[in-house]
Length: 168
Image (cartoon, rainbow, N blue to C red; front, side, top):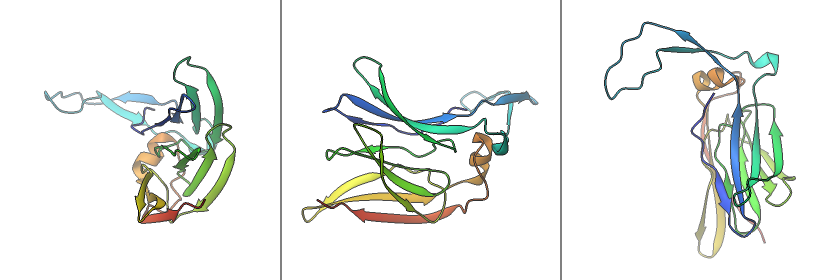
């Protein structure tokens, strides 16, 4: 399955942080009516069974000069959230199981994890206010899309925005 999640870059490390959906899907042919300018697949995907373990995700850190994979952070669910790379050497993202987490940009080691109110498919953002740095992460999932990707649909859909103040 292909997803439209956004990666991020750390130019100091020459690394791109790419959230990946590993979920092989089959398509079934349906009634094919094509309208110019409209989305067309010629059928519908057959949902992946999340219990069989064939769908999973990872964040891949790739050197964008050489194509070398430096590290992978594995997750048992397809990665539907974008990544945010900070100048302080962190990579923020989230999982469909509702965990926001931060990784060490150089090593991929998990440094922090926090359970939000539902699955995460958002793009984390960073901002500054009065000289203080913050990261905001939305918690909101759509069970239909999660099911097609092979994710767990027993996770609340969410609908929350969490803001975390970054320390020194």
